[in-house]
Image (cartoon, rainbow, N blue to C red):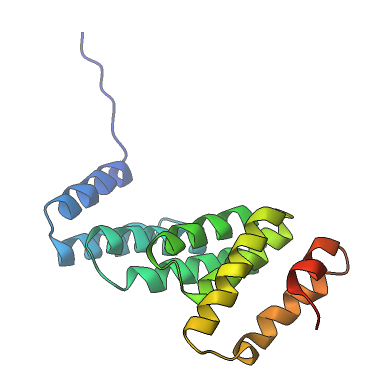
Length: 161
């Protein structure tokens, strides 16, 4: 008895992409990814996958793609996705103040006080270490302060204005 099952072409292409990445065939892998990405309706997810491909190929542009994905998730109010990608970035760039503040914002929206507080302390330390004026982050800090009205722990975390 013979059972004919067709494997969708897209599935085969994803396996091909994985194989190209494993063999380190950078340009071919990126070309296959670009073709496959057109089948994805979720732009943020496509950027996240592009970051995954670039990271697997040890391409420093992966950070940019992951950040774009996290920012798009944030703008779409997909907080868990945004914080997940941000955490992934922070595993590699633990003292990046922009990423730390993005994590603070996402965790504040999700009302996860311990994580927001932890990342705010890391953010404060990072800007002091790098000698960056907090004014550089005015817009982001203002967005967090606006939430403080509903979340009193934020007011305490931010300290005096």
